[in-house]
Image (cartoon, rainbow, N blue to C red; front, side, top):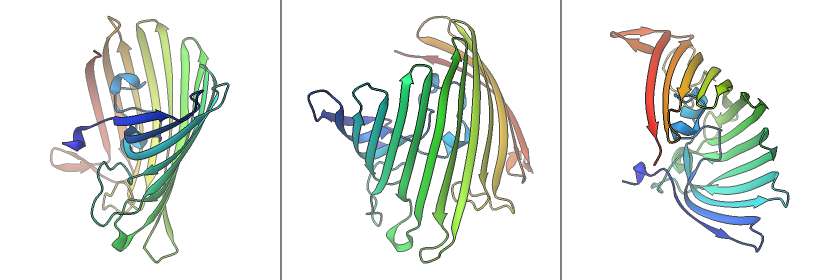
Length: 259
């Protein structure tokens, strides 16, 4: 049942001015700019990097906001990489950090990091992950999100080598009118050693993609969306009619209503 929770946490203000907060429970991930709530994202489908990094996390978060409110910092003690409950053999806490600079509604710069493990103590592999992105409102109609994630994980508990993966992404959004918007996304995900996405193929998961979506809000609490997306991989990892292909094309549509 707990696996169906998106968010369930408690926050306590630690000072009179509300600059220090302590939160505990199941919280939205401090990694990435995309949400599990689709209507809050610029694209209908999630990017490859969002689908392969935490949407939520369980633990304790100590947050601080400067007097002007332009800087926010957080230190987190987490129950692993997107896990809700403790599991036998996984006693080690992971650490998270976040620094966000938002001097105005036109600019947001963020760096988030994860230090820990997603493997049991019997075969503990240390993982380090960094998420960097910027959100730029170039003018009232044009917005840009650009970012890149990179991670490293030990190859073996006692080994010195590290496996690495990385994923850059950029989304350009154009809103010609109040109720209409469109967004173009270009992305790449390179995980040759299969740390996050195991394919069992010679080149691992090395996939690039692009998408274009159109959004319409007929009323304030409803959004209609349609998106075309193309993914192309170095190896044949997509299944179609019982055969492995190196590309995948799709069209998705959605109706989102907020209550």
